[in-house]
Image (cartoon, rainbow, N blue to C red; front, top):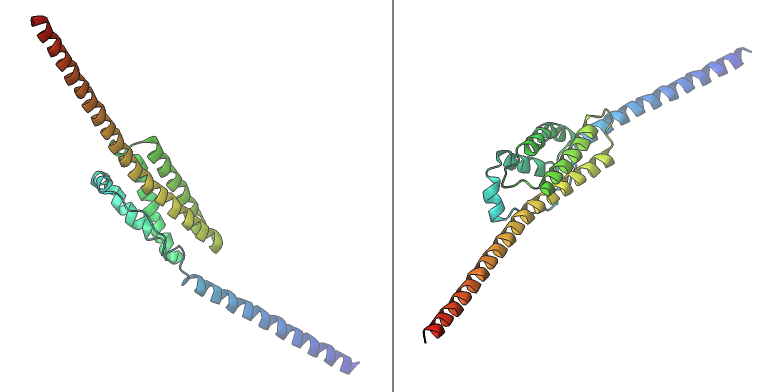
Length: 198
């Protein structure tokens, strides 16, 4: 019986030792994962944002917050979680300011809609960053969605000025056509007057 007790005691000690070693390795593994998370870079450094046309750039200077927003939002690519957290505080504030201060020369329903989309995408990203346990795949997806929404916004700004140029050209063409018709009618009237005099 004594040998059985010492055998049982030995098994319990070995079992306890194995369990405690397993817990230590899990703890160190979790610590390693946390250290890795702080060095992982998120986003796509190669994402190509369109550039604003010269005319759009001239008008954007009236929108003071836009330049800060653009440089800040483009820099979210290639950042760690901690860097993203601090950037997103500024970005959410800038997006609010963008939506509340659209200059009259830039205001269109489509641009306003694009800002709302950016606001939604940045809010989702901010929410993910505020979670206790961040899903890295979802975080990457949200950054990609922010990139695409900003890209579409810049395209929309350029299209607004392209449309304005087309509308202006159309007005000029119509004006020139009306003047041409008026000159033609004036010349016919002058010919009729000459015929009546003869």
